[in-house]
Image (tube, one colour):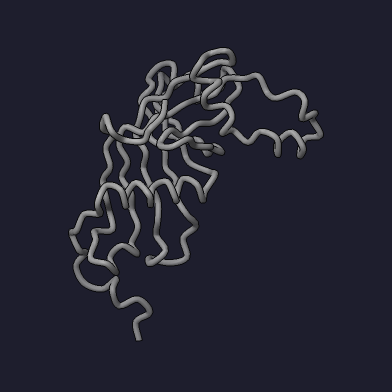
Length: 176
């Protein structure tokens, strides 16, 4: 007996309505906190696991100044970010490739002040016995999504392609 017979045969080709696709992407971004950031710089490609936060379709993370990923972003701001849910089997395959241009913002800049409240730095401070009265002062990296390739094999059950494509438009709920 096949556990998930809907996985057999050719994949459906149906496209999710944009609103439903955005909801699924945001659900994935909200339910995970780790990603792999891919950058390229003078020393070549670099794939770095980082803890991320998001505000709408903008991913963000903190980083120490001078790190290889920040040097690469300075050389070429085009990045790709892989976010995925833990995989148990083909039926649970769910993830997103987010493409955008990273921007490093500093405290005092309007974009920093707008996005900083979404960064949950307090748990790190507690874990490291640091005062909650002194938030970190380092840079914040913002990656507004320009396009997303979303994969979810469970979509096949309802006649939709397991790979869906989203692109930023003037009416999209991305923040930067």
